[in-house]
Image 1 (cartoon, each protein chain N blue to C red):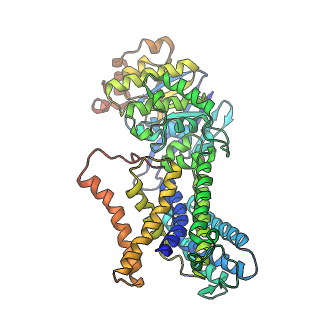
Image 2 (cartoon, each protein chain N blue to C red; image 1 turned 90 degrees about the horizontal axis):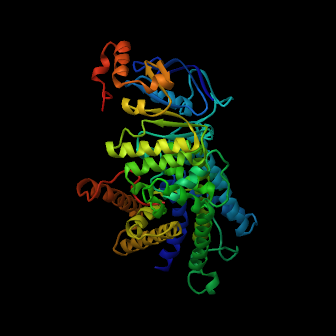
Amino acid sequence: MLELKNIHKTFNPGTVNEKTALCGLDLKLNEGDFVTVIGGNGAGKSTMLNAIAGVWLVDEGTITIDGDDVTKLPEHKRAKYLGRVFQDPMNGTAATMQIDENLALAARRGKFRSLKKGITSKEMAYFRERLATLDLGLEDRMTTKVGLLSGGQRQALTLLMAALVKPRLLLLDEHTAALDPKTASKVLDTTQKIVEADNITTLMITHNMKDAIAHGNRLIMMHEGNIIYDVSGDEKKNLHVSDLLAKFEEVSGGAFANDRMMLN
Amino acid sequence: MPGACAQGLIWGIMAIGVYITFKILDLADLTVDGTMATGGAVCVMMMLSGHSFGVSLLAAFIVGCIAGLVTGILHTALGIPAILAGILTQLGLYSINLRILDNKANQAINVDKYNLLVSLRYIKGVPFYKNTILVVAIIIAILVGVLYWFFGTELGSAIRATGSNNNMSRAQGINTNAMKVIGLVLSNGIVAFASGLYAQYQGFADVNAGRGAIVIGLAAVIIADVIFGRIKGNFAFKLVSVSFGAIIYYIVLQIVMWLGLNSNDLKLLSAIIVATFLAVPYLKSHYAPKRTVKKGDNADA
């Protein structure tokens, strides 16, 4: 359903800061795939997600989602295909707006925004129902400004918003990395629940190898702007962290031993 | 004092325009220094050529919208930083304003010969329905009502989201550039409308009428924030409090003038007031933090 073909992206070309982030990347996702993405710093994981989301246009290559060529589409037009959750909990919600207002914005993702009411009372009931599934008590705080919520609450809300209108593809960019371990695992459980409930095709970047193995049906490892390892099915289920570390060391000559991702 | 009230109310309309860009969209739009003269110029020239105040004010609004559109395009389509885009439009408007005013620095409109909506002569000794304070208060009530409705719509919510979080808005499929342009258009339209009223009130349109307008608008927004910000109110309350902010600003100016400062000192005084009100919240959070203040934590809009 998602197909990346020969994607190239270089930042600051022609300057001392030139950085080739993606170099001939190919990736094909099947409907319902839940793919975890791992790789060291600067491997191009976030760059890949940003390329799909259209944060900027790629230098070369094509991106198709469900057969639609979106390579040249600006970010806001690709939004109708995508649900996104970011690493920084501040990024995924509008802090100065209420919980219900944020949900109402998400409910209109990919639709034309007219002069009709921003939230209808019918929607309110639906939002309340969906919020209750998070089990955070947010359904009783619908008019609270999102800026007053904790990071974990905000990430859970962002997840809910990303899936409120079922996206063709859900992009999770290390969405638990900024949370404490307990909250992170709760948000990850929520993620699993939401993805399974709607059978959403998902790309999830994580720094935690255990999570990468425990979740999803497929795992890809990136290095220097390309995919160097791609496992799925039983082979993935039987993976161990040590296997992944060995793979890392193989491609990078041991440099990953110092990487912040390690075991945690 | 009633004069200060009437002036404050008219500037309150202008300040509501500034509120849209500064608070809702988080943009400092300096175009208003130009549109605050343009609206008056358009309005007075239209009235001098025989149009009613209604048509003239509408024309002022539309011309203001166009000025906002220019700034919006400079900023979004051409990538010029918002402040600079506003300054460029404002500078260009100076020449345009002179053209509108028939190459004169000002054009008078006689309250005895023309049917004006507001005037400094309509403060005392006129039937109550002609009283400028009442008329402007009603206009503000209508304006606040319309804006309250608008910012509650799907489109209005998208504009608020854009000001609150650009990344999130795009991820939710909002064309943030278009929202910024709409906000700038609306804001400058309102400012030009206020300018049209102000020119009628004073009895003349002046090419320099907009000098420092942004500072007065900001002063009203900030005074409202400091004085009424703690009261939990809805969006309509926030807009009304902005116009009260403008009244307070004019009353303070009046008091200072009574204390012996002359009107030439007002600009300096305005600058000091705004700098102080802007600095206080920053210094407070910096040197006496009560709780961690994060960006976006403040509860407005």
